[in-house]
Length: 99
Image 1 (cartoon, rainbow, N blue to C red):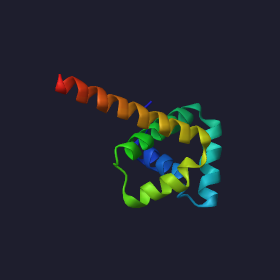
Image 2 (image 1 turned 180 degrees about the horizontal axis):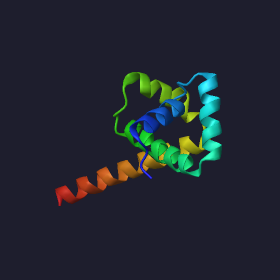
Image 3 (image 1 turned 120 degrees about the vertical axis):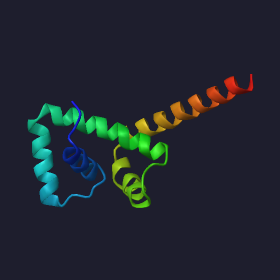
């Protein structure tokens, strides 16, 4: 399920720690009651990681990503994996181009 733009924006703001405490609590309640929201959250998490690796986040989004999003050890591990895969793909492509 592809999130609607307003839901995508809300999830991104949540993941970057930009919601008020009340809005965060309301969002987390919705998250617990709606399995589809969990899927959307995971999709946006992956997109944020990709955006970080490919330097597509603004300066303030990068800081929030580093300070808030990466609090989770699981997210840190997924970031390391994304960086490794990106590096591998880049070096593999470079080797093919020089052959």
